[in-house]
Image (cartoon, rainbow, N blue to C red; front, side, top):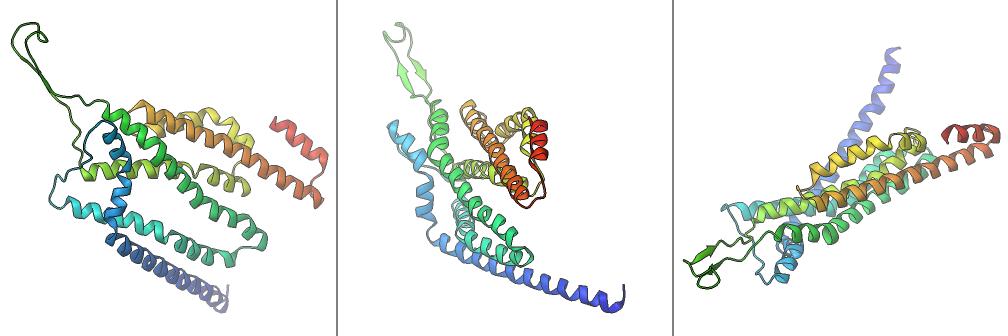
Length: 288
């Protein structure tokens, strides 16, 4: 390769890196702006996030209150809420910057194929987050708070006529930071798990996976989902079973979506005359 050809290839690379830098700067600025905005309203956001635990405590006739174990804990809770809220606010703009960087290098049909996934990914994440917040978290907190007991002093007939017996009370006094960590962990776990159909369908569209292959590794997927449920959820059976059921259901939905993608791709190839019905039928027989 001559020096002129090397310079020609170097120039587009420098332009792409400069554009990538600009996109990253715009994304970081948008994230910082969102973070600052959320910092000023962190308290209403925290009140919203504490609705599940407050509802469970009120149902038990208890006062809804969380404690600060460390002096600086409240400040860092506000920072964490600001980080999470800033990313959520800036995510549409960050996604647009990513799309504007990638789109010029895609063909028209590739843009049509990729664009729906750009909208489906945040939609599925918010669906998973809402499922965790409104269904899974209340069930988990109801389970955990069930281990409380009311303290009392028993005597006379109740104690069998002997000396008074004291029964220790077990009352929830949760840390603000620990509660926020647990809640965010639930939301992120289910939000990311709901990305499974989007990821596998996109891989199927790219030809990286097939419906037949996903069906053959189903038993390994079950083991992987069980391990995932044990890692990302607290050690209680209820949330683990819910997460396993949801993720396995999403896996089966992914197989169905990949199969639809394959049928659509075979139909397009058949219309272009690149494959024939006998080839398609033989492939279907092998898949069955």
